[in-house]
View 1: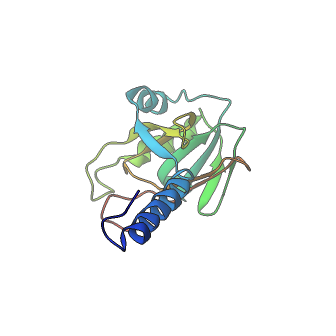
View 2: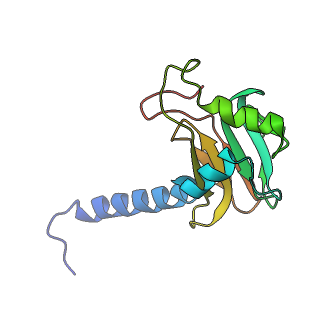
Amino acid sequence: MQWLCPGAKLAAAVVLSAVLVCGCAAGQWGRLETDTGVTQMFEDNRVPKDFRYYVCGRPNMPYAIVGLDPAYTFDLHLWQEVTPNNRDFAHRVDFIWEPRVWDRFDSGRGARILDPEGNSIGIWYSMYPNAAIQIDAQKQQVIVFCPHRAGEGNF
């Protein structure tokens, strides 16, 4: 095969390399998938008991609550473990959306935490719809960065 442009081989190699690098890096990130059933679980104070739960923000005034499959370890930087399905947990869920406290009027929303392959590995509740979720599949470790709105920095 003859290339029409002398630099085409180099350009093709650069593009192919970029695609491979981006593809490999993208495999390390999880995502949130909004789920009204998860929202209801948090609001009813009946989240799965077999998950481990963590809050980001002040312990009784969180920005987000994460429940994670116990097969995964959780990076506790900026997060604190809490016990689910009790009065304190219900208070934390209620605090996620208090219009008199927050300058935002979005209600709390639940979501499934999905790994890079789309498998559900946990649940999420926050008034913030976005968070960066990094997953090391080999170590089965999850890092969830504090939540934020698109266009805002993390806390």
